[in-house]
Amino acid sequence: MTTKYISFLAATFLSLVATTTQAQVKKAEIMATGLTCSLCSNAINKQLEAMPTVANVETDLNTNTFVITFKDDNFVEPVVLKDAVEKAGFFVGSMVVTMNLNSDMIKSENSFVINNNTFNLIDKKSVRAGESKFKIANKGFVTQKEYKKLAKSNAKNESYLANEKQVYHLQTIL
Image 1 (cartoon, rainbow, N blue to C red):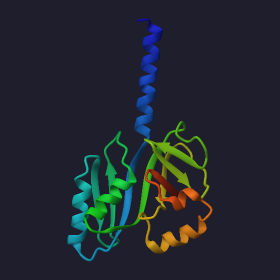
Image 2: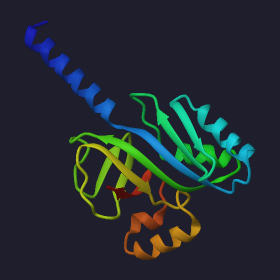
Image 3: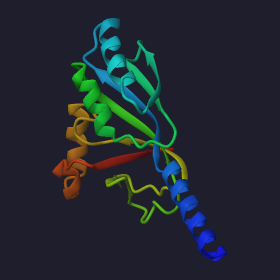
Image 4: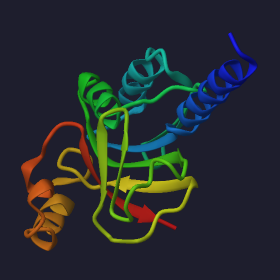
C-alpha cells in the first residue's frame, strides 16, 4: 500500500470517529408524572440504570426529575428513555436532551439527522455545532395539556401531527 492510501484511510477513520463521538445525546433530564412516593422514583431509577448506555442517574424527589448521563460514544434514542419510564408504570411530563452536534450533521437550520433519527426544530432557532439543549415536544414527551397547545400552534406542520417514530420535534433551549 502506498503512503497516500494509508494516510487517506487514517483520515477517513478519524473523521468517522469524530462524527460518531459528537453525534450523541450526552445527557437527558426527564420529569416524570404520576409519582406519589420514593418507591415510585426507585422503579424509574432501576429501569434507567439497567440501560447499558447509562453512566449515571441522579434523582430529584422534589421535582420528580431524573438526570441521566450517558457513556461516551453512544447514541440513545429518546423513545428508549420514554419507554423505560413507561415500563416502570409512569409517564414523561417533559424531556430535555443535551446533544453534542458537529457541523456536518447540521444540513439545514430546521433539522438534522443522527443515526436515522430526524430532529426537526419547531421554534426555528438556529443551531450551531457544539453542545445544545432541546426540549422534545412530541406526544408522549410532554404533558397532554402541553401537547394540545403545541398541536394547535403546529397544525400546519404535517410531520408534527403524524407522530412518526424516529422523528422528533425540538424546542431549542438557550
